[in-house]
Image (cartoon, rainbow, N blue to C red; front, top):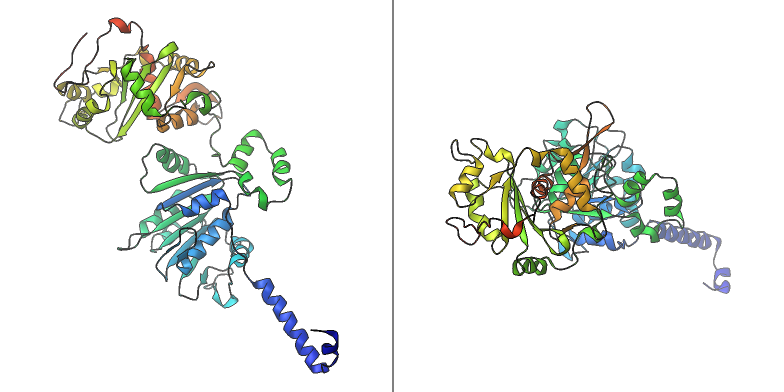
Length: 475
């Protein structure tokens, strides 16, 4: 408005104009912004897996991403996948503490959406426990401190965890996602400072391909650097120990103290850059001597690795295999799995010699394999000695180039080597000079393969046929 126009207004009109300007400014302050995810956040938001787990550093933008995912589900439109979900729906957001609802979540949500006071429900509590949306969708807040039964009696459409929860909360909520004709989703984001079960029961099995419908992501704080105060990452990092930097800036798991081989294993050095099929075809064509090592278990999948001695005496892990099969089923698929390789020896954990392990009465695993034409033997006492095994794996990982080489699709063994820990003395924070491979089945199989002294005298060794399913041949 021009000055001469303003001068012609009455005092009442001027006051009304001032009120209108103030209201306009107030509404501008309340107007939500537009969330623009950074590259790593966008990768998570565009993934369509049933369960997504994000292990990230501090300052990665976890709450912003989780909050916008909750709003997208509540409003029924996903802008990152350009898709729609059914509404009204129920979204459970699990936080560690109740005061985070108003101090963190409401503050974050109001950056991106209009959240009227009348939409906030407390249900008799001193803190907000629910947000209702205009379409009837409900965002309900639950907390780690609540009793186990609180999580057993609800059927949510979507579940969001802000920070790693105790395992019983996760189990209780996924149990409730059972309504027919619905597609439930779960999204967890947090810095892995607690809940070690996420590493052993989610992350490591996912790496090994054992969790269908699950996708895990790692988030580094530097991915969100554009949204952080200048110099924040460098300043924060300077105050942390090496272990804390791994956890708080790179999303590593907190319970990885005592790692035994991680300092020796470098993916750039130990994983072959060539396509796996190229290396495998070369091994068949050049008849590299091979060993198959098996780690059977009555209640877990059978794990096996196929290891070869390549040029310059380098040891190549060509294949890994993990599948829940009986001994006879495993033998039936073995011939295709090992077809074309120059297999000198098939070695199996001595547990395979025990009665009833074959799944057919009192027959052992090895006995059933023999009946199917797979001539395998049990490990000897010397092949299972821990001290010798530690020397072998350490020697194989050292050197430049290192002796041990893995193909890029042997992800289960890669994870076992990176995550294996020393055995700890009971009730004492001191480690034994012994690798804890009780739950590292691919690494157990590699232990037996390395103990065979692969390639020694291979020109005169017996070759176990893999192309004749009715038996074996000697050479």
